[in-house]
Image (cartoon, protein in one colour):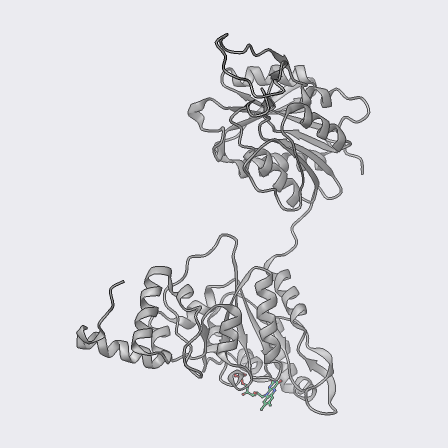
Length: 480
Ligand SMILES: Cc1cc2nc3c(=O)[nH]c(=O)nc-3n(C[C@H](O)[C@H](O)[C@H](O)COP(=O)(O)O)c2cc1C
């Protein structure tokens, strides 16, 4: 790789580089490497490597890293109290819960822990200074205040709480706390006399009225000899639990206690040990329904044909190959409250399946005799004892969609049919979008509800929402 000769650079650039390197405690060459890494990988990854010299100033922020889907971010302000060391464990606990943590250390906090420890544990830059010219060129304190879902202050010192209650903003931590419109969680930690002091209690009352949430302080031994009382910081796990409750509030679970059986994907019908008949189903729609039903609180059993998808978390997945295996697993999974048959089950299988690989011979092609596969939807719909109260089938058609779906609903004896056009031009088979019509039996008639083009996740949500509504309306009676 070509080397870079710093001497040949323009004087103004050299000066800028030297200043930048001095601020970050690196050599000029190392600073150039960081700039190059930042340019290629984005600034946050480049900064993962901790500063080179001990006591170096922590690098200031650059532009934002792109955000992973579903990523949650916390700005953690660490105040100057003995309990600051526990905040290092808190960083770890939050990261275990897939929460990105950016730390801000007050000047006092740096007497108790170093920015380097916080940076090493969070794998992020650590911020310490309001008047950091590089950080402030794009108002770094405002970004730290807003580029997160929650601000946590742990330990929250009496001093920080007093500043917050009175709207002071004379350092980075208090400026962030004043500039934010995010929820704030405080974990106060101080000597019991500081906590019970009338001024602190006034501030606690004010902060409560301002909508600030607190976890702790707990009662117990203090760091000071022979002192005990209320003032200990909540344990890191308690704080992480409080963060989780604020960031991921429990979702409604309308299908809790209900058992939902779902099939998905194609089936493979063997011709011989190495060949099979298959179809183009990807399984995405059935897997999406399983994930949504699970999120709605249901116990979900997913019987999946051969697909290239990850098992949805929290779902019991039974992998099968052929239609007969699928039926066997389905029957074994009954009883269920709701059955949703989204699999594209092969209608036929090879009757004369070869025990050995079929060979090319001069006699010409081997004749394949097809026989009908068991009809899983019809079989389950017509069960006497173990028929689920709601049986939903899928009708994948390439022509006369609604007419064929109506006929299928009647013939199979199921309750609802989700009909979709799978002509090649629609891209539904294997694609991520679906246009469906929901056919439901209503007082001897069949109602057709046509939905707009949606992603398969949206179709799954809509379908489960219809199920939940049917349970709520008592159109669908499920055992309690
Ligand atoms: C050894 C030591 C321990 C301290 N522990 C605490 C504490 O647990 N809680 C607290 O509110 N202040 C504590 N203080 C006082 C704070 O460090 C002081 O009020 C400081 O100004 C807080 O700054 P900050 O709020 O910007 O972090 C302690 C001070 C010392 C010297």
